[in-house]
Structure formats: C-alpha cells, structure tokens
Image 1 (cartoon, helix red, strand yellow):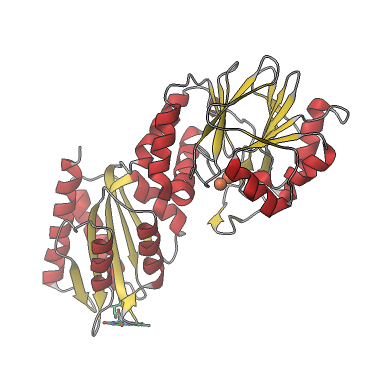
Image 2 (cartoon, rainbow, N blue to C red):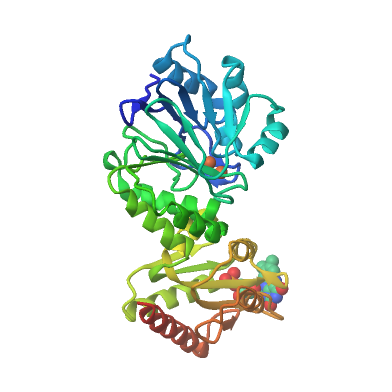
Amino acid sequence: MYNSVNITKDICWVGVNDRQSRVFENLWPLDHGVAHNSYLIVDDKVALVDTAAEGQAGDFFRKVESIIGTEKEVDYLIVNHMEPDHSGLMKALLDRNPDMKIVGNKKTFGLIESFYGITSNLVEVKEGDEIQLGKHTLKFFMTPMVHWPETMVTYETHTKALFSGDAFGSFGSLDGGIFDDEVNLSFFEEEMRRYYSNIVGKYGAPVQRAINKLSSLDINYICSTHGPIWRTEPSRVISLYDKWSKQEGEEGAVIVYGTMYGNTAKMAELIAQSLSEQGIKNIKLYDSSKTHISYILRDIWKYNGLIIGSCAYNTNLFPPIEALTEKLKHVGLKNKSLGIFGTYSWSGGGVNNLQKFADEVKISPVAEPVEAKCATCDSDINGLKNLAQKMAESLKSDK
Ligand SMILES: Cc1cc2nc3c(=O)[nH]c(=O)nc-3n(C[C@H](O)[C@H](O)[C@H](O)COP(=O)(O)O)c2cc1C
Ligand SMILES: [Fe+2]
Ligand SMILES: [Fe+2]
C-alpha cells in the first residue's frame, strides 16, 4: 500500500517511512525507524515541499502520483533543506517534471549544483518572499543552521501550515497515525529530544533566532521532515524546542560511567543511591560501553545534573567516555550541575581528564572529584556521598 494522507483538503503527506536502515546519517541508531516527510500542495499550481532519500523513489513517486496522476506536473519543488535525506529525489523529480521550478535561496543553489549538477529551473527566494499557488500562498523565512546553512522554512498562509524542515523533527517511523493526536506522544517526545540533542543540539543559538523570527506567525500545523505532524497544540513543541535550545533541563541526573572491571560502576551505584536518599527521583545510570551515546545525550538534555565517571585507560579516559566528552564539548554543553569521579591503579588518566573537560566546558564540578585507587576505600565512599549531596542541593536550587 502506498497511502498518502490529507492534512487539509489540499495538502497531503507524501512521506516515506524507513524501517530498514539501522542508522541515520550512518551513525544514529534507528531502533524504531524514521520517517522522511514530504508534502504535496495541490492548487492551481502544484507544489512539493522537500522530497525524500534517493533510495525511497518507489514509495515516494507512487504516493505523489496517487494524488496528481501521471499527467499533471509538479510546478514547484520547495527546497527547505538540502541534506540528502530530503533532497535525494530532486533530480529524479526534475526528470519527470522538466518544467518544474526549484525554489530555494542563494545558499541552496550552490549545494544543488554541487550535489546534483542542476543549474537551471531555479527560482531564488529571499526572506519574506511569497509564491502564489492559487488560494494557497507560500511565504519563506530563512533559518540558517537549523540544521544546515541553507535551511529555510515555508509558511502557507491560507491553512497556516508551517513546513519546518528538520526543526521539530523526530526519529521513529509513522506506524499508522501521522498526527500528534494519533500517536504515542511520550514515545515521540523522547525520540524528538534524541533527534534534537544529537542532530541539532549544537545549534541552540540559531534555533533561538528561528523561534523568535517565527513567533508572530499563527500556526495550525507544524509539518516537519521527520516524525509526526503537530496539529493539536503546536505551541507545545515550540516551547520544548525553546527549552532544549537553551539547554534548560528538569530536576534529575544522568550518571554515566566507563568501566572495565566494575570498580567505577560500583562508585556510580553508590552515587545513585545517595542521590536517591537526597530525594532525587529522576536518575539515569548508564554504562557507556553498552548504551549508544545518542540515548545518553538525549537524557543529558533532559536533566540538569550530569555525573561522569571514568577509569583510567592508557593514561586517558575510557574510550566511550572520551567520545562522550568530545561530543559534549562539540555541542557546547551548558547549564549543568556537573560531578566527576573515577578510578586508577598507578598514574591515573580518568579523573584528571574529566577535570580538563570540566575546564573546557567552563563548568566547575559541584564537589571535589573522587578518584579511587583500584577499589573504593572508606574515604572514597565519603567523597561519593558528599558529591551526591552537593549534586542534590544544586539540582534543588535550580527550581
Ligand atoms: C588496558 C588498561 C589500561 C589502563 N591504563 C591505566 C593508566 O594509564 N593509568 C592508571 O592509573 N591506571 C590504568 N589502568 C588501571 C585501571 O584504570 C584501574 O584498575 C581501575 O580501577 C579500573 O576500573 P574498573 O574496575 O572500573 O574498570 C588501566 C587498566 C587497563 C586494563
Ligand atoms: Fe538535516
Ligand atoms: Fe532531515
């Protein structure tokens, strides 16, 4: 079955689900798939907003043709975003619709030429420009770095639908329902935050600029390129994005550790128990060797507290913890209460590098770092309890 779905009378979802790929961007686990959403607007002129990935041609074109047939042409392709998961079928679409206009901004066209060798049929739009399709009018707003430099969003003034590109997108395929009121929202909120923190997280400032720019729009639908269509309470997801882009978390802590033989893990458990005794209920404890970093980052984005532990490993951090700290530096971690701890047997490498990380992200740990030699002794246990107490105090004072 290749069903498209009506969003309004004339706007259709012609997105494609990918339940086959194991990873997104050849990197991020897709345990529950992902949707590549595309939208068809049928009026006097026909417009498509974004396409899908190259390998999804079969499903995609069948859905488009189920609405407009093979005779009617697509008049406009609106290119909100050039990442190949959305632009991959541009060339094939142009081959089928040789008169189609490709709408983008100056930065879009450089990428179109470099990716696909297309230099004709291009229509450049600038901030606030409009294209009339009939009763539908498309209005364009530039939102650079949400998620690439050429990124823009398209607002349809008649239905008040915002085609937002990757913004407000989520992992997770659309397995039946496509609207927020038809799906399990708590699942999608988790997957949306995993998408945000891993894919867009570095670009908090551009997201803030985009939110401010779009704040005057009256929005009935948010149609993202991934995940459900938000029609019930679009303002709710906007406020989630607002919070995430400012890295404002909730009361709770992620404890993540790197261990070979379990000594560092025991310290983590002790911290978790002490935190619980201090009344902290949201505690996520992760072994960095087992859980993919994308899930750990998702929860780091959720909570105000972050406690990282590492055994020493060849004078350095344990490799998955090294990868995590690099990622956290890269995304510009801020607004966290931070705790650090670890283990060593001779000259160290774990805790001193965690301290270096804390210095680099300019967050001073809430308590003295605790470093156990081989296994924890009584003074280490006191240190860990102190760390937990200071963390709990810090989390509660964030309220
Ligand atoms: C492959 C390997 C490399 C290590 N490198 C160091 C090191 O550079 N400096 C150090 O002080 N200890 C080093 N150690 C010792 C461990 O950090 C130490 O035994 C620690 O307590 C292990 O913690 P765990 O039980 O959580 O794995 C190394 C151990 C192994 C197995
Ligand atoms: Fe993207
Ligand atoms: Fe995308």
